[in-house]
Amino acid sequence: MTLTTERPTTATEAPAKAKKVRRERPYRRRGGSDFTKPTLTGLILRYALLVGILALVIGPFLWQLSTSFKGPQEDLYSFPPKLIPEDPTFGNYSTVTDIVPVYRYALHSLLVSLGSVVTNVVLSVIGGYALACMRFRGKFIALGILLSTMLLPGEVTVTSNLLTINALGLGNTLWGVFLPGAIAAMNVLLIATACRMIPKEVLDAATVDGATTWQRIRHIVWPNVRGMASVVAIFTFIGQWDDYLWPLMVLTEPDNYTLTVGMAYLNSNFSPDPRLVAAGTMVALIPIVVMFSITQRYFFKGVQDGAVKG
Image 1 (cartoon, rainbow, N blue to C red):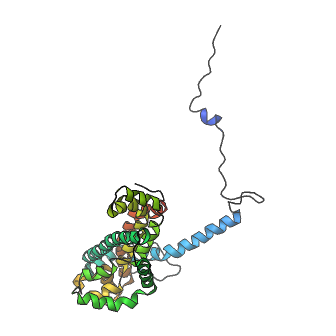
Image 2: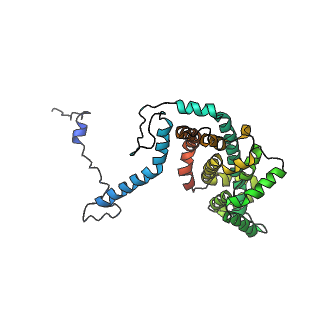
């Protein structure tokens, strides 16, 4: 009696035997029942709308970037605009650093921005926890004061802040630029909203187990609000880095200027070249791009973390 065995399928024969999986269409056909997908016309309109919005958002940025690399002989205002320079050059960037001490001004802006990020995150977590998770007399009065400060535009309090900073002897210093932005009412309310998502039973159980307030903040509150804290950090950094009016009022000596105030020289009569203004704008934009690139994972995903972590 002879035994017969099947020849094993080789690697080249396996794809031939496998069934071809059809790629699912991103739209539904006419008369289809899957209403979760748009029709072909609706899909085309959606992409057309997205392309239009994308052009409006990044169009000015691309034009500024292109202008910063254009030479002195190129026409900047031709229509349609030419985004690719005919004779690209890095001379505009070197000229900017010759006119303005960019690196020193950037260091000043970085110190103010990072200091504001640290104080806003720490104080917002503490204040948000107190408003959302603690009981104390005058809680609603404090909440009302925070909300009322948000109704006033920042320009209303500029004069009082300037008088206070000068009275403290912090005029013409980076401390004077930093102090009014050390904490913002909006950031406290954002963290308080995130703290309200923490189950009260978990905090009560930690209290019964003997956890102190700082231990509850560190081991329960912080893991659940760090997504919102990353949002606070990003917007605080961008706001302080781009701030122009307040540093302009506080700082009187060019040696203490921040980057936004220093870049105003490029728009003055001393240097009216739009190419230099565009190059200075790109230099000022680099730290924001780096900051967002580092924290974007927490920015998009961290806010949605709802699980309680111990």
